[in-house]
Length: 87
Image (cartoon, rainbow, N blue to C red; front, top):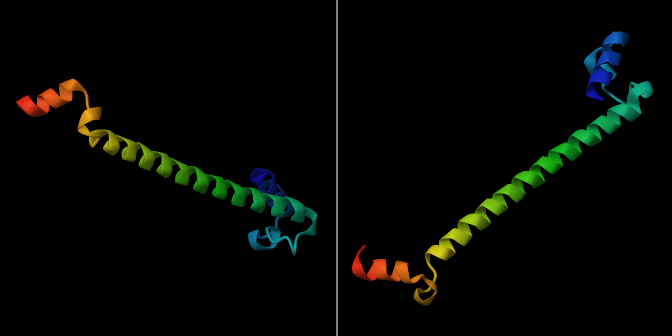
């Protein structure tokens, strides 16, 4: 859509500020508004993906640290033996 709008702007020979202002360009106003909404939606989705990635990464770190500090009775025999006999 962005490429189509830019091609139309260049074909019309209009200035960027005039062409991309939906109040001044009734012919392309719907597409300009749709392009803006799609850009905002894409930014929102990227933010959600980044937040989800950070949360998953934090959960992985938290799970690893819990596993490293599990109670003695939950640790494997090998880990307890190593701790007792200094291996």
